[in-house]
Image 1 (cartoon, one colour):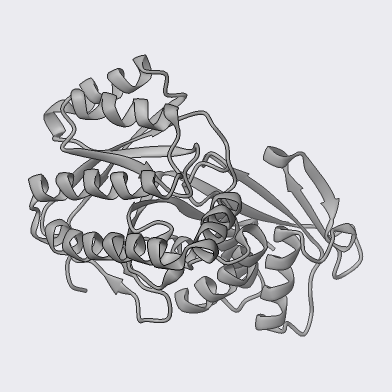
Image 2 (spheres, one colour; image 1 turned 180 degrees about the vertical axis):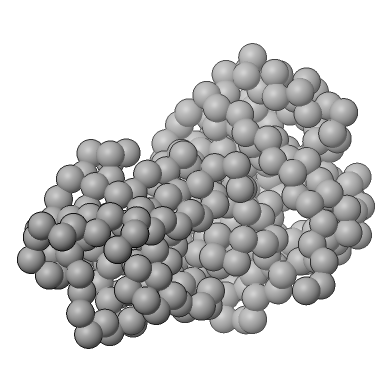
Length: 318
């Protein structure tokens, strides 16, 4: 049997983080120049059904049977096996690697799950459709985040810009003009589930105040959807700045993120905000193509640990 591998991109949220957990819309795009890879190597020397997992990035080298049931990799394998229901499970080793920074709002956990689900179902001769892959990855996301929105698994599985609202059909955004985005890592690592939990506690304590903030974020996201599709870059940048102000009211920004956001704006970005759970991780800036290199260098000079640029190209009807 040949070696099989699958990749899944990262993702970045443009609008709507945190509010999306409370039923408001969010917009996210794939980041295809970073990815997670899952590779399956058949093992003819072991007994049938023996599964070994190697994930160097997290110093894991273990048999599947030795992992806890709630380990995300174990859960992804178990859920895939349940869905595919193979008559025979060959012995194999699965190797997992990723260039997506962990706990930085780029969807590293969902990307690993999706790559693993895809490679395993393909290896077993029953490749799963995108919707099923996304649904299974969502179940794994519950382990990572407790009460995930579902946006990470959705945008990464479909690899298209997505307008997402939990419980509603996804909308692939057919943008008419390319946009350039610069993503900067603050170097601060705060798991998403921690910031989601912190916001949840504030919401429980003062639902009227926080529901109003979530509503405002939802309104911005709806306006941003139109601006992104139509290529209204000035409006899009302003909406990013407004969204950032509301995220600061949720207390999910940080001094380093604020410094990077201000630096990007001063260097010519049309707009900039944090992306993801916050209190660390990444910020993102909408940048005219002529100013991308200048903004990148400015962010590095301001202390960004990593800077990634990505272009969202036009999406047409299929």
